Length: 196
Image (cartoon, rainbow, N blue to C red; front, side, top):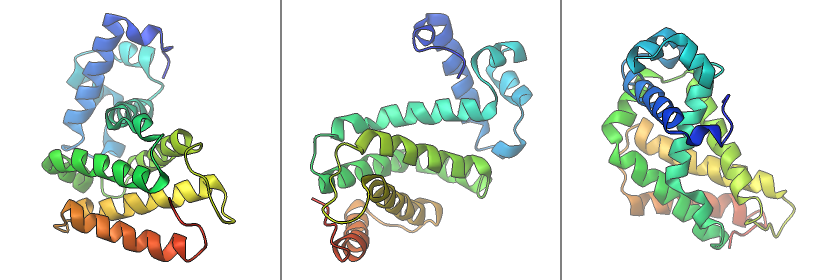
C-alpha cells in the first residue's frame, strides 16, 4: 500500500480505503477476481483511477489490504499469551465463527473464485501473518523449527475450514474440534512435538 500508517488515519484516507474495500467486497461474489479490473473497482467505489493508484499499487494490493482488515477483526494478537494448543483452538474458532456468520457470502465468493491466484494469495497472506504473530508463542519440544510447526498447524486449520466451508460439509464446531485434534494427534504427537 502506498500510504504510511500515519497517512491512513486521516478521515479522507479512511473513507477512500473503506469505499474501495466495500467495492471489492461487493464485486467478489459477482465476478472472478482475476477478471476484475481496476476500472471495475473504481466504478463500484465511485472514484477515478488516479485515486485508486494514489492508494494502491494494483488490485492485489487492495486485496491484501482488505485481507489485513479481516485479520485485524480476528484479533490474533490477543491469543499470543495462551498455551500453544489453546492458540490453535481459539484461532480456529475465530476464523470458523467469522466464516459461519457470513456463510452465504463466503460460499458465493469461493464458488466464483474457485481456483484463482487471489485465493491462494489470501491463504499465503494469512499464513505469513499467523507465522509473524505467533513465532514467539510456539516452543517446539522436538526437532522441528518453530516456523515449520506454525505453518503446519495453521495449514491444517485452513484444510479443515476448506473441507467444511468450500467443500460444503455440514460440520459443527465441536465436530470440527475433533477433526483438528485427530489431525494434530497423528502428525505432531507421533513426531515427538506435542503441542501444549
